[in-house]
Amino acid sequence: MDKKELQKTANTVRKGIITAVHGAKAGHPGGSLSAADIFTYLYFAEMNVDPKNPKDPDRDRFVLSKGHTAPGLYSVLANKGYFPVEDLPTLRHLGSYLQGHPDMKHIPGVDMSSGSLGQGLSAACGMALAGKLDKKSYRVYCLCGDGELQEGQIWEAAMFAGAKNLDNLCVIVDNNNLQIDGPVSEVCSPYPIDKKFEAFNFHVINVADGNDMDQLKAAFDEAKTVKGKGVSFMENQVGWHGKAPNDEEYATAMADLDKIEEAL
Image 1: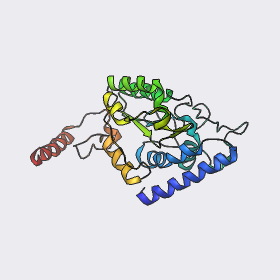
Image 2: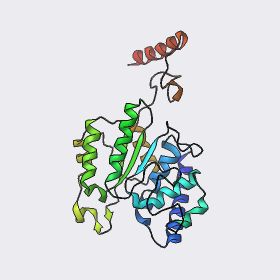
Image 3: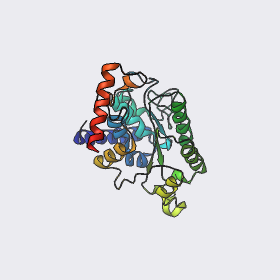
Image 4: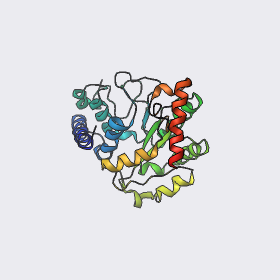
């Protein structure tokens, strides 16, 4: 999906957010709208997910740590095809599966129930560690709010992630500088956010405009590695997760790497 298509999809996601919150007569549109481009880029460009196989053990995982912005997640999931877009106006209605916060037991595509601020990142760390132990290639993405960084559990999880070298974990902070009581910087400033995560062994990428698709692409491209990098026929091929090359494939792979060595 190219930039213009991503922008159009993000706008459709925003319409879904407004529709859902209007239908509920309650909810959290602000933080959902600020993260709409992030939701869109993740689900339509970045993550390895398939609505037709939502429980695929090799899929990438997403945890919405700031779970109150569920309208944003629901809208992108619906537009991705996990459930009907027509269900969005039932948000928070009695009997609707679209609850006020994400529920992994009842909502297709939700990987982790969340809502109590600070806890989502810990769950994401657990998923990332499990991937390491199981020798899986999936990645875990976790979206946190900047006000949420005032929760101590965030930094316990960050310390754990750094200590365990969870390089399959990508933490995204939606830094819109507003929380329910006012500007984050005035309520209880978490700044400088980048230096804090760097102190916990994170590779930090500052994005000047988190609503700009080009900047999001550059950041996510930097934040991940290419599976099979350096060997032409292995790059981004899931089939090469756990098998050895035959003699012919070995020769081709070594030739590819020899070319890189010569260029260097």
